[in-house]
Image 1 (cartoon, rainbow, N blue to C red):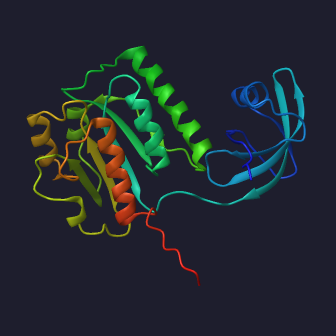
Image 2: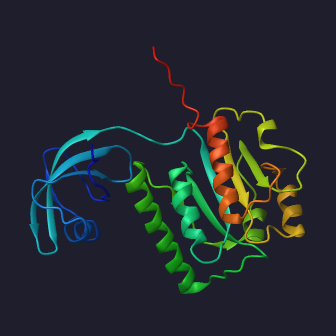
Image 3: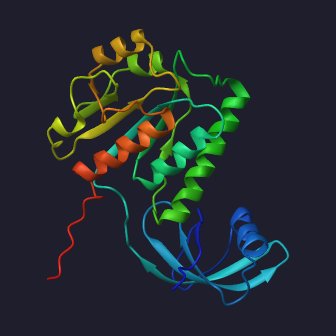
Length: 254
């Protein structure tokens, strides 16, 4: 059975009402997927829950739908995780953002570290931020999430660290030479936020590691091998979700 196409539709929706899809969604539905009148869709506003709908009109660049029903279904992780990711070169950052969304991250903080190959400023930073947010939307449409993770504007790692943190935050940092494994960390208590810091190509500089330690980050290793920046964060997110989150779902025959 093929699932209905899912679209982020940030407009007011109500069961029984008709609405015109936003331009981006209308273009994708009619020009890319070539959907026609009568086709079923799933729409979500980003505020939680999702709506079943069907197309009632396709006219040039306009696509109108009728909203048929609402489901309060949520697919969010029980863990509140912020991924603090040093900027990566090429398409690696897009991949990290996309997969982090699939793995249930709640917030993504792009930071410029001393070893970051990529440097963003002014309008280029604005364009990249808009691009990453579009990657988030597409990932949510694909993986079934009904709430959009936040992506904040890039800033230097030093500035971000020196701002401090809120109470009840567990701060984790991957370091190949660390003497402690992730599995040795006690299960976070209810209401604890998790911040995961990942360096760029070449890892974090010694000064950054020291500052992160002073700011409460616990250095951990994730196995005996050195992971690339595009692997490290995703592997750590998967491990955290398996140990403490919703990847370790209990399945019984009862």
